[in-house]
Image (cartoon, rainbow, N blue to C red; front, side, top):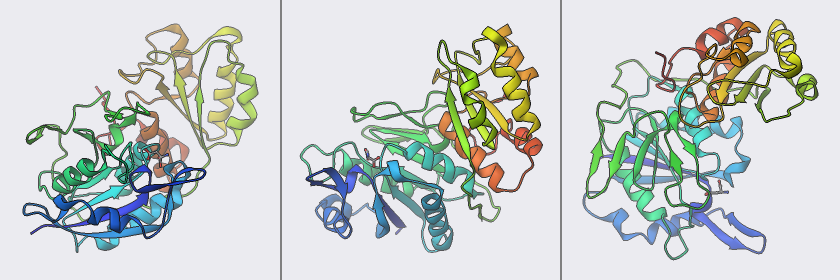
Length: 335
Ligand code: ASP
């Protein structure tokens, strides 16, 4: 029988009602799990619960919590066949992306899930998400960090939260789903990462100063200059396939200076679907000339966590630029 570790970090799934709104409560989650009879039926794996303290609303996640989760999986790797991480939905896509970079040569399933409605409420989506995630975490075809929610299994570093109130809250705009869950769990075996025999490596992250700038019509880039100077990595969410306003040419000298100072500027798109293609339009060509690099079809979540990972690994800015444009964990499509 398979043995799975459930790591409960907080999030709506285990929250209770307080006078200030939903919040997690230490020591309460075990009783919620005990009230789901399916978790004890034949066909389910054995599981243990590890409650990470303090429990968090996932808005409060930082690299410190990512390191704690990564370290726990690394330490317990030989004891368990798979891992289910229960997490708030707000930053689940960031944590999933970060863990994919932190856990190199993963050969067991790590499945993140949570819910939009707390388990104690009527109509909670939490029980199905946990039950199905436990079955996925027991499946020997999965060797990667993924996210299960509302009937779909998605690669973690391709996921993005797109709905704050639908029960299908996540999308994978640029990569096929890893499995669809109906009467059966139908795996898309072509899309899954192949198993490796290499030994698992854990990469811990440092709290690197990283920024995200979303371009909008009329943006005054000069206001952002002092901020960009302080950052090691900047993700620019541009229009369409990598375009920025070219009035006054104000951004380009800033990027040029930032690049000389060792800041890596990554161009992503505000369009969730599709890829950045620097040079297709005049308005994006200049970005490339100024030293920015293409994030192709990376989600912003994956771009941010990849920057954390590469800078924490001790790469120089030039090496970070080179690695950003490579596919490391199935996070990017490079044609
Ligand atoms: N604010 C909650 C969280 O991310 C939302 C959720 O879990 O759905 O922890």
